[in-house]
Image 1 (cartoon, rainbow, N blue to C red):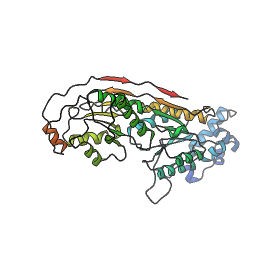
Image 2 (cartoon, one colour; image 1 turned 60 degrees about the vertical axis):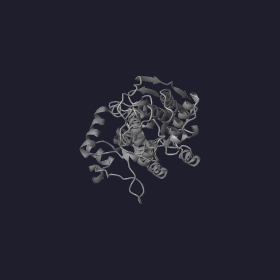
Image 3 (cartoon, rainbow, N blue to C red; image 1 turned 120 degrees about the vertical axis):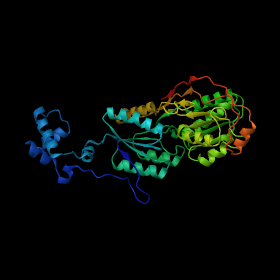
Length: 394
């Protein structure tokens, strides 16, 4: 699965590694293959195009000649003749993020089984970089795009994507329903997590949602607000942060002060920062701070304490996005745009407990003193899972 990376600032296009093919260096052509195989050039062409009229023994002679000459067909020329490259371009925010990697895996496996390759690149939440990658993909004549776009609220950017006249499937982005999209129920998942913490007695629950300009960020905030409304409480809007602006300084400021939150819900990409800052401030999980991750992994299920999570299925999101793309490329696109939403599941582990009353030691922690509160046995929350329902709209 090829990865494309943007060049250093001041250059254009993408970094490319020159192909070391011996045939290309020696200028081998179909004429050379025909000469070695002892057949006509047209016969070689029919073998390359998998024409069924070629006799098996002749086909093997041509293939043997290709192997002997280390000949590789010109994929670009063949794609121009066929009108398709059987390559799909994919852009995610950052390929190192666990959720992105799982979505890519799901999509790549599905596309490969159908005879398609996938080119992958990261945008790093930069629209200019995103457009540059798309430009490069188009130069390589990709057949379609599967995208996690940086901003799905911008009418200008949505119009730009429509102007490409390419099959496009969005994952974890909405763009006002202008494209086929595959999503996770971030609103429902965040609502269940928030309601669970409120039910334990927490009155100040912090939320680190996805980027503000994305469907994920908006849906998480909406779920947080709805959970408070469901319990007839006003949401603590001052405790809402977003990925991107949530850094070490913001996290430290959030978790200090005499009125700090006693619980926090954070995306899996921000979880490490939350746990690191909490540890530095002497806050114990869950006795001083209850923690829920939006996103799961085998590692955070094995931490001590094991982290309660809102679990989605990014592999299935990727697989379904690939299925939608294949239906569009196969000439049978859905009559109406499809918006598929997969459910979220709240998996209860050991990182949440009832809040305890502030002590003198905790006040000192709130003032950034690295002091631990008096030892006590925190109330334990039951473990298990709370599942949500699936929503799908064609």
